[in-house]
Image (cartoon, rainbow, N blue to C red; front, side):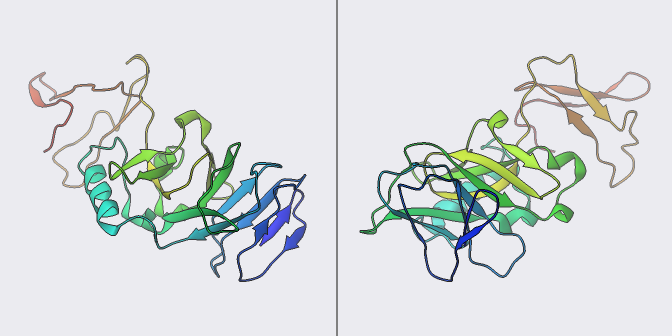
Length: 231
Protein backbone atom coordinates (compact mmCIF):
# COMPACT_ATOMS: atom_id res chain seq x y z
CA UNK A 1 0.00 0.00 0.00
CA UNK A 2 1.24 3.51 -0.81
CA UNK A 3 -0.19 6.55 0.93
CA UNK A 4 0.40 10.21 0.30
CA UNK A 5 1.02 12.71 3.10
CA UNK A 6 -2.12 12.96 5.19
CA UNK A 7 -2.94 9.27 4.88
CA UNK A 8 -4.74 9.23 1.50
CA UNK A 9 -4.31 5.83 -0.15
CA UNK A 10 -2.86 6.29 -3.63
CA UNK A 11 -2.11 2.66 -4.54
CA UNK A 12 -2.86 -0.73 -3.04
CA UNK A 13 -2.49 -4.38 -3.88
CA UNK A 14 -0.51 -7.52 -3.24
CA UNK A 15 1.89 -6.66 -6.05
CA UNK A 16 4.97 -4.45 -5.83
CA UNK A 17 4.35 -0.76 -6.41
CA UNK A 18 6.58 1.16 -8.78
CA UNK A 19 7.36 4.52 -7.21
CA UNK A 20 7.50 7.48 -9.54
CA UNK A 21 10.75 9.37 -9.06
CA UNK A 22 8.91 12.57 -9.97
CA UNK A 23 6.51 12.37 -7.00
CA UNK A 24 6.06 15.68 -5.20
CA UNK A 25 4.60 14.26 -1.98
CA UNK A 26 5.94 12.09 0.81
CA UNK A 27 5.07 8.48 -0.02
CA UNK A 28 4.79 5.62 2.47
CA UNK A 29 5.32 2.00 1.45
CA UNK A 30 3.91 -0.63 3.86
CA UNK A 31 4.82 -4.30 3.87
CA UNK A 32 2.15 -6.71 2.70
CA UNK A 33 1.16 -8.66 5.79
CA UNK A 34 -1.99 -9.48 7.72
CA UNK A 35 -0.29 -8.39 10.94
CA UNK A 36 -1.32 -5.11 12.49
CA UNK A 37 2.37 -4.38 12.99
CA UNK A 38 3.67 -3.43 9.56
CA UNK A 39 7.14 -2.21 8.66
CA UNK A 40 7.12 0.88 6.46
CA UNK A 41 9.43 3.07 4.43
CA UNK A 42 8.73 6.79 4.12
CA UNK A 43 10.08 8.24 0.88
CA UNK A 44 10.50 12.05 0.60
CA UNK A 45 9.88 13.67 -2.80
CA UNK A 46 12.57 13.12 -5.46
CA UNK A 47 14.54 10.65 -3.33
CA UNK A 48 15.34 8.51 -6.39
CA UNK A 49 16.59 9.29 -9.87
CA UNK A 50 14.58 6.49 -11.51
CA UNK A 51 11.31 4.65 -10.81
CA UNK A 52 11.86 2.02 -8.11
CA UNK A 53 10.17 -0.86 -6.33
CA UNK A 54 10.61 -1.08 -2.56
CA UNK A 55 10.32 -4.65 -1.31
CA UNK A 56 9.93 -5.33 2.44
CA UNK A 57 10.40 -8.97 3.41
CA UNK A 58 10.70 -10.93 6.64
CA UNK A 59 12.94 -13.62 5.10
CA UNK A 60 16.37 -12.43 3.91
CA UNK A 61 17.02 -13.40 0.29
CA UNK A 62 20.28 -11.58 -0.49
CA UNK A 63 22.28 -12.24 2.68
CA UNK A 64 23.39 -15.77 3.50
CA UNK A 65 21.91 -17.29 6.64
CA UNK A 66 25.40 -18.09 7.89
CA UNK A 67 26.23 -14.39 8.05
CA UNK A 68 23.09 -13.63 10.04
CA UNK A 69 23.89 -16.53 12.37
CA UNK A 70 27.44 -15.23 12.84
CA UNK A 71 26.13 -11.72 13.52
CA UNK A 72 23.68 -13.04 16.12
CA UNK A 73 26.46 -15.00 17.81
CA UNK A 74 28.78 -11.97 17.90
CA UNK A 75 26.06 -9.78 19.39
CA UNK A 76 25.16 -12.36 22.04
CA UNK A 77 28.84 -12.53 22.98
CA UNK A 78 28.86 -8.79 23.54
CA UNK A 79 30.96 -8.01 20.50
CA UNK A 80 28.47 -5.77 18.75
CA UNK A 81 27.69 -3.37 21.58
CA UNK A 82 23.99 -4.27 21.35
CA UNK A 83 21.60 -6.69 23.02
CA UNK A 84 19.47 -9.00 20.88
CA UNK A 85 16.24 -9.89 22.65
CA UNK A 86 14.75 -13.18 21.42
CA UNK A 87 11.28 -11.63 21.69
CA UNK A 88 12.35 -9.10 19.06
CA UNK A 89 13.46 -11.70 16.51
CA UNK A 90 10.20 -11.10 14.64
CA UNK A 91 11.27 -7.52 13.89
CA UNK A 92 13.78 -8.75 11.29
CA UNK A 93 13.14 -7.28 7.84
CA UNK A 94 15.06 -7.16 4.58
CA UNK A 95 14.55 -3.98 2.57
CA UNK A 96 15.36 -4.13 -1.13
CA UNK A 97 15.03 -1.24 -3.55
CA UNK A 98 15.13 -2.18 -7.22
CA UNK A 99 14.88 -0.23 -10.46
CA UNK A 100 12.78 -1.36 -13.42
CA UNK A 101 15.57 -3.67 -14.58
CA UNK A 102 15.74 -5.38 -11.19
CA UNK A 103 19.02 -3.77 -10.15
CA UNK A 104 19.58 -2.64 -6.56
CA UNK A 105 19.64 1.12 -6.22
CA UNK A 106 20.13 3.71 -3.50
CA UNK A 107 18.27 6.93 -2.73
CA UNK A 108 19.72 10.36 -3.37
CA UNK A 109 18.52 11.42 0.09
CA UNK A 110 17.77 9.52 3.25
CA UNK A 111 14.46 7.71 3.59
CA UNK A 112 12.89 6.69 6.90
CA UNK A 113 12.60 3.05 7.88
CA UNK A 114 9.85 2.31 10.42
CA UNK A 115 10.01 -1.02 12.24
CA UNK A 116 7.22 -2.02 14.64
CA UNK A 117 7.64 -4.00 17.85
CA UNK A 118 5.45 -5.75 20.40
CA UNK A 119 5.49 -3.55 23.49
CA UNK A 120 4.71 -6.56 25.69
CA UNK A 121 8.05 -8.10 24.67
CA UNK A 122 10.10 -5.15 25.93
CA UNK A 123 10.68 -4.08 29.51
CA UNK A 124 9.93 -0.46 30.25
CA UNK A 125 13.57 0.51 30.83
CA UNK A 126 14.54 -1.09 27.51
CA UNK A 127 11.94 0.63 25.32
CA UNK A 128 13.71 3.98 24.97
CA UNK A 129 16.96 2.16 24.10
CA UNK A 130 15.48 0.26 21.16
CA UNK A 131 17.39 0.96 17.96
CA UNK A 132 17.32 -0.28 14.38
CA UNK A 133 20.30 -2.52 13.63
CA UNK A 134 21.73 -3.19 10.18
CA UNK A 135 23.38 -6.46 9.18
CA UNK A 136 26.75 -5.73 7.61
CA UNK A 137 27.24 -8.56 5.06
CA UNK A 138 30.99 -7.92 4.83
CA UNK A 139 31.70 -8.29 8.55
CA UNK A 140 28.68 -10.47 9.46
CA UNK A 141 27.94 -8.14 12.37
CA UNK A 142 24.95 -6.17 13.57
CA UNK A 143 25.60 -2.42 13.52
CA UNK A 144 23.48 0.50 14.65
CA UNK A 145 21.82 1.58 11.39
CA UNK A 146 21.98 5.31 12.13
CA UNK A 147 23.52 7.44 14.89
CA UNK A 148 21.89 6.81 18.26
CA UNK A 149 20.33 10.27 18.49
CA UNK A 150 18.96 10.19 14.93
CA UNK A 151 16.64 7.29 15.70
CA UNK A 152 13.31 7.81 17.44
CA UNK A 153 11.25 5.43 19.56
CA UNK A 154 7.54 6.26 19.29
CA UNK A 155 6.05 4.35 22.19
CA UNK A 156 2.47 5.36 21.42
CA UNK A 157 2.75 3.70 17.99
CA UNK A 158 5.07 0.88 19.05
CA UNK A 159 7.66 1.69 16.35
CA UNK A 160 11.25 2.81 15.92
CA UNK A 161 11.94 5.36 13.16
CA UNK A 162 15.39 5.37 11.55
CA UNK A 163 16.83 7.36 8.62
CA UNK A 164 18.76 5.18 6.14
CA UNK A 165 20.57 5.78 2.87
CA UNK A 166 21.31 2.16 1.99
CA UNK A 167 19.44 -1.09 2.38
CA UNK A 168 20.15 -4.46 3.93
CA UNK A 169 18.70 -6.76 6.57
CA UNK A 170 17.45 -4.86 9.61
CA UNK A 171 16.06 -5.72 13.04
CA UNK A 172 15.54 -4.10 16.40
CA UNK A 173 17.90 -4.46 19.32
CA UNK A 174 18.70 -2.71 22.58
CA UNK A 175 21.62 -0.30 22.40
CA UNK A 176 22.32 1.96 25.34
CA UNK A 177 24.26 5.11 24.48
CA UNK A 178 27.39 5.46 26.66
CA UNK A 179 27.50 8.44 28.99
CA UNK A 180 30.23 11.07 28.77
CA UNK A 181 31.05 10.81 32.48
CA UNK A 182 30.08 8.80 35.54
CA UNK A 183 28.42 11.78 37.23
CA UNK A 184 24.90 10.60 36.42
CA UNK A 185 25.25 6.85 37.05
CA UNK A 186 22.15 5.22 38.53
CA UNK A 187 22.03 1.80 40.19
CA UNK A 188 18.78 0.07 41.09
CA UNK A 189 17.80 -1.53 43.31
CA UNK A 190 20.39 -0.17 45.70
CA UNK A 191 21.03 -1.74 48.15
CA UNK A 192 20.36 -5.12 46.52
CA UNK A 193 19.92 -8.53 48.12
CA UNK A 194 22.13 -10.74 45.95
CA UNK A 195 21.18 -13.82 47.98
CA UNK A 196 17.90 -13.87 46.05
CA UNK A 197 18.19 -16.18 43.05
CA UNK A 198 16.37 -13.85 40.67
CA UNK A 199 17.65 -10.53 41.96
CA UNK A 200 18.68 -8.32 39.04
CA UNK A 201 20.70 -5.12 39.39
CA UNK A 202 20.69 -2.46 36.69
CA UNK A 203 23.24 0.26 35.92
CA UNK A 204 22.25 3.25 33.84
CA UNK A 205 24.38 5.96 32.19
CA UNK A 206 27.71 4.14 32.32
CA UNK A 207 30.70 5.31 30.29
CA UNK A 208 32.46 3.16 27.71
CA UNK A 209 34.58 0.37 29.26
CA UNK A 210 33.51 1.18 32.82
CA UNK A 211 34.56 -1.10 35.68
CA UNK A 212 31.97 -2.03 38.32
CA UNK A 213 32.85 -3.06 41.88
CA UNK A 214 30.24 -4.47 44.27
CA UNK A 215 30.82 -4.39 48.03
CA UNK A 216 28.93 -5.97 50.90
CA UNK A 217 27.58 -4.05 53.88
CA UNK A 218 30.92 -4.35 55.71
CA UNK A 219 32.85 -2.87 52.82
CA UNK A 220 34.36 -6.10 51.54
CA UNK A 221 34.69 -6.44 47.77
CA UNK A 222 32.25 -9.07 46.49
CA UNK A 223 32.91 -8.91 42.77
CA UNK A 224 34.78 -6.74 40.30
CA UNK A 225 33.36 -6.56 36.77
CA UNK A 226 35.72 -5.17 34.14
CA UNK A 227 34.89 -4.81 30.42
CA UNK A 228 34.25 -8.27 28.99
CA UNK A 229 33.39 -9.73 32.39
CA UNK A 230 31.38 -12.97 32.36
CA UNK A 231 29.99 -14.57 35.54
